[in-house]
Image 1 (cartoon, rainbow, N blue to C red):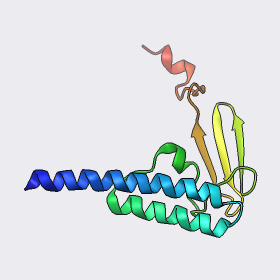
Image 2 (image 1 turned 180 degrees about the vertical axis):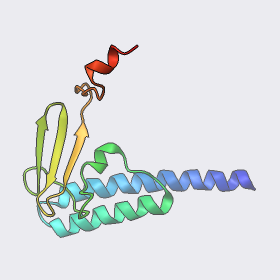
Image 3 (image 1 turned 30 degrees about the vertical axis):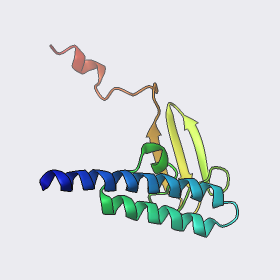
Length: 119
């Protein structure tokens, strides 16, 4: 009986993941015509993820503002900048800034050079 429940949960998570990706896809297509509808699709995708304990993939997280929950479309309601190996996305609705370290970007060392000589 326990195996049956685990199998059902796995199937439910797969379906939830598919719905989330579909909602983000539709939100991207609909944004030009109706930004409010795109924001609604993103909020539905977030609720589905929370309900079924499915984390959003990284590329989808970057398309959603963590401050106001709106769908982010570069050039229309968000600003995207690259600087020093970091990606900075600024939401123009709530002015929330999200920063991501890019792959291969240089990471600054937190240790000072004087600490290395103290062995």
